[in-house]
Image 1 (cartoon, rainbow, N blue to C red):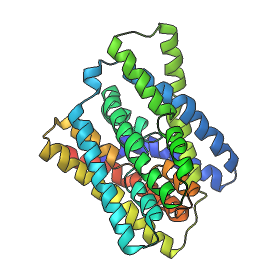
Image 2 (tube, rainbow, N blue to C red):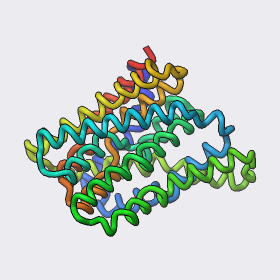
Image 3 (cartoon, rainbow, N blue to C red):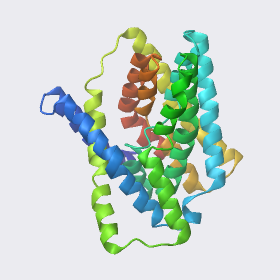
Length: 309
C-alpha cells in the first residue's frame, strides 16, 4: 500500500502545489484558466495521440473492456439519477447533473499521469476507451437530460457536439487510432515535438486542478450532497467496474486493474460546465468535484493496491 501511495505522491503533490499557490496569492485565479486551456487543448491531445498512434490497434483496444466499462458507467448513472430523484426531488435536470457527477471521471487531467505511472504506455488504450465511454456517450446523455429538462432543446445538440465529438482529446484518440490502424509511423521530428508538448500535460493540468480546489466554499447541506455523490463515484463505481470486468467478463488482470483505477478517479470538471449552463445545481456539483478530488488522494492508491491483492 505504501509503495502505491509513494508512486502517486508526486502527482497529487502538484495538485497540492496549485492549491497552496492560489491560497497564498502566489498564483492568481485567472492563471488557472490559461493553464487548463493549454493542457486540455494542446498538451493532452499531443500526449494521447502519440501514445495511441505508437501502439498496435489490437493491443490498445478491447471490445469487451469497452462494453463492460460502458455498462458499469450506465448502471452508476441510473443509480445516481434515482437517488437524486428520491432524496433531492428538484427535477430531472438536477438529477441528470448529479448522475453525471457520480460517473464521469477526471480522465483528461488526472488519467494520463496516473495511468502512465501505474501501468506504463500500455494503459493508453484503456484510458482512451474510458474517455469514449464516459465522455462521448454518458456525458452526452447527461447533458441532453439537463438541457431538455430546462427547456433548452434548441441548443442541446450543438453544445453536446462541441463538448464531445469536437473535444480535442476525443479527436486525438480518433486520429491516433487511425494512425495505429494504418501502421503509419510518425516522423522522428514530429514524434519529438509531440513528446515534448505532451510531457507538459500532467504538471499543468494537475496544478490547475489544485488551484481550482482552493476556490471552493460550501455549506453543510452542500457538503452532505457532495458526500453522497463522491461516495457513489469513489466506492460504488470502481466496485461495480471490478465486478463487471473481473467476475462477469473475466478479463485479463491488466484490463481490470486499469479499469478500477480509472473508475476510482474523482469527478470531472466538465460536468460542472453542463450543470452551470443549464442551472442544474452547479454549486453542489462543484462541491462534489472538489470533495472527490481531495478524497482521491488516499482512495486512488488504495483502490489500485486492493485490486492487485
